[in-house]
Image 1 (cartoon, rainbow, N blue to C red):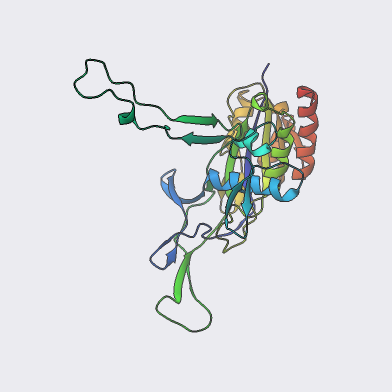
Image 2: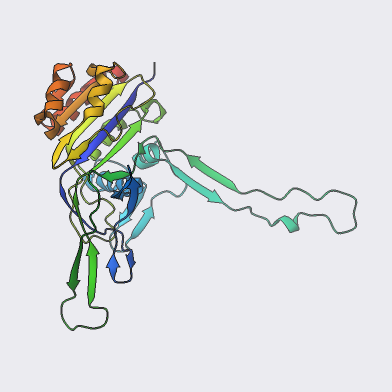
Length: 303
């Protein structure tokens, strides 16, 4: 029997702005997608994975291969050959190293005029491990209205002193999935949960704003089902958070309520009360919910 951990996280409300150093003219831009027919802002899964790895690095509790060097403003590998037994990020997030062929194809071919077929072109090699942790793109809960702030650099002014910044006051939601049997060390599933509820600056390479990416509400599912069935389950309407599709799936018995751990502000809603009545594991605090599901995981995996 294979166990799977799925989750959907809703961040706190805040003012999101550029965090990637990209711009159009003198306007620093947000990433955007068309979501349910309207323009929403978005944060990449890569940025969330970066923040998780940085959490492990700065916590001092884990061996991390790809470490962020603040002085160089770049990543530094501890072992270019990778080691998923030693390094948590190699195990959880995966890796890929591609090496070109050591000889050129024409160096191996027979001289012109011979009847022998030319040898096949040499192939490069690749060292690949698919990441165990899968993360969706984070999407804003409300459409982007096009807000831009205009600013000026301090000191002497010049042609490049004035600039604008796209800003979106919103929450973001994103989901994740992992199958701990694919890990070299199954107990690292606990470190994933600890990191995801403690994310600070997502991306962080070009930090012009502080946005709290820690969960304000969270839904976790520990199950033998192969499908999450809860991704992007949160909705926002005139500032009110809800999760009607999650309740629908529980009522339809597509999700067993005892497989769910629900915590945070969502419990103060009518939907939250109904999910509690259906038998979901509910907690006011995010951290207490995670500690409880970690105990369940520890018993089931015997780690």
